[in-house]
Length: 367
Image 1 (tube, helix red, strand yellow):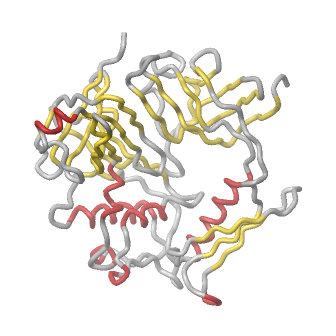
Image 2 (cartoon, rainbow, N blue to C red):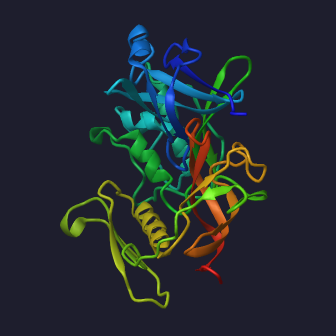
Image 3 (cartoon, helix red, strand yellow):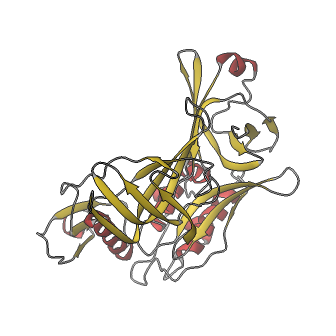
């Protein structure tokens, strides 16, 4: 039996329910690691014309309920006519910060920051954004703490008002380094009919090593693309550049000797002023570029007991075994997000995005 879905619309400021059951079609939604996640869908023009108050871009919140559980929530950003339908695009809670700036400086007096926990800075960003008139989305940020540090006595992390810092970009910088906390956007039913909108924080990372579920070809994995291998994106040396011009430009080189030819890549981060942030970003980029060949996406059966939808969270490590004509891949893979299509010719389908965890085995097919 196909799972029951319901799509809801709510006014962003008043909280009034605009529609308890939107007739959406061609729906695709999902969360992501260190990002807002997204929703795309279509709506008939007849319904859209009859209820123009619902499709108020930038002021309507959309939710997805599956089998009585809220699985996704976010802000409607676009409604574009396409042939005989209206194409909708929405993104999760953190997308709102891309349209918010620090207009007072130092997050309303909360900064500057020296040897500060980035989790605290993230909470301060949201506290500042939601303190201004008509800026409160009622987002709760986890009380997670970390041992990571941002800002130094020589170069504090600052938010100068004359630069109109984009709060969303500041959030991205705080979670970009390898030792930074992780976040994901979360939505759930609260008490009664209330809705909890939350930014989940995790340190040293979100998720857990899951021994109770798995992704396996022939069991719950429907298909997976072949694993490509290429040196085009490989690098064991990263030259990271930050703010400044000429000789005053910030620069950090992260390099390791790994028994391979030296391969270099430039990481341009024009808005980064702190040398500590620049160094962490360079290390994270070098680690990412040293990996050659990985399973990046798989399609799974959403209700298979091996790993039903809802059993895994963003950030979890899941043991993955993929076999196809080109390779056998076995190892722990980290879930970085997923995309759900509730309907279609094959019914509900789930595409899971993966990244390598800290333990894996990779070899040619048949080994």
